[in-house]
Image 1 (cartoon, rainbow, N blue to C red):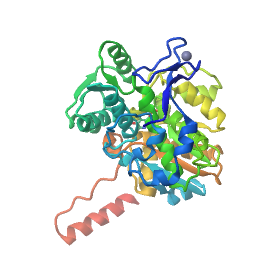
Image 2 (cartoon, helix red, strand yellow):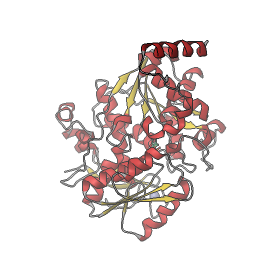
Image 3 (tube, rainbow, N blue to C red):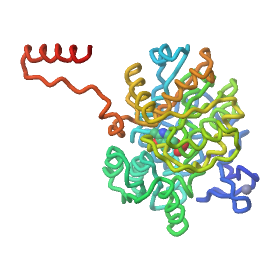
Image 4 (cartoon, rainbow, N blue to C red):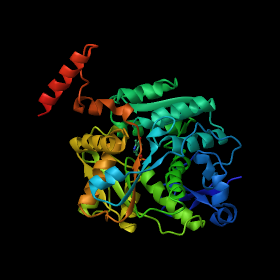
Length: 413
Ligand SMILES: *Cc1c(COP(=O)(O)O)cnc(C)c1O
Ligand SMILES: [Zn+2]
């Protein structure tokens, strides 16, 4: 039994039944899951959660799924790492990294997709589909395999090899579209009107996006049931960012934490920074851009939740930063060098922006800060391959090894 009452328009508040719909018929506002929070408050407890599975499904009372069967391939309960080396390098006191690069399909997308695929089963769909910037394709294909659903996933044709292979291995119908993500998304929105498929980030988006709330729930639980002071997270479509915020607010609403929700700061690549641009210009509207960045997983020129991200940044008194391609690569390398975590380009954006936010005084050195590392570096090897120190080439002898060492030392000075 779940506590979802229906869907609610984020703009006009009209209520809708829990079906595969995502837009308000009256004002075209986005629909969002609506819960009976009093009932949740009466039934949820820290102990009950602690006794649950070691996946996102320990927070089931706060998720929108009613069916008996959930598709659980092990998303969630990823490490929250105290990052003292990186904190020292940046000049802040208490920094944590939520390492979501170690989910089953190697990105945080397993959280929303686990919820979306479970809801798709409950609603009686036989096909799971998506418009993907890469990681979503991998996750949808993996969850469909597990659920016994057909999968049809659409990606931009110029995706990194790691993401194409990471999706193709599960044998979905994989469609490489000649265009960027915004073209893929437009095509899928048209297809969603004609095919009776569950497009996880289109017609079942209200359920899909709820899965990202678990990124807030877990961090609060891992910190001993409190919210941090400051969050840094990347924005692609903006779903992740808005749902981390919703997650912390819900925890307070149902009495699981006492602390106020954190300040929320956003990270975007400079080559695709529509939210950052509005933030800097102080405008309310997010103007679409044409993406040109190595951070393909967040290269969304027309972010569906961009406007709501701006509002959250304002309301929470957070900040926003953007990182160039060289800074993204430097961010990936900085994280690897200091904390032993290999993230993809989106994580490089987050680390580079974290650094800027500290340097610009947007993050106070005394704030307990959490940065979200959303994807795995093995999927975007193209971005760093030309920026790494090559292996020493040696014959299997001590002489050869020592000669190579001497040569490298000479080359370094
Ligand atoms: C999809 C994605 C994001 C952005 O998520 P949105 O919900 O679209 O804002 C960030 N990081 C990675 C690694 C992603 O795959
Ligand atoms: Zn409405």
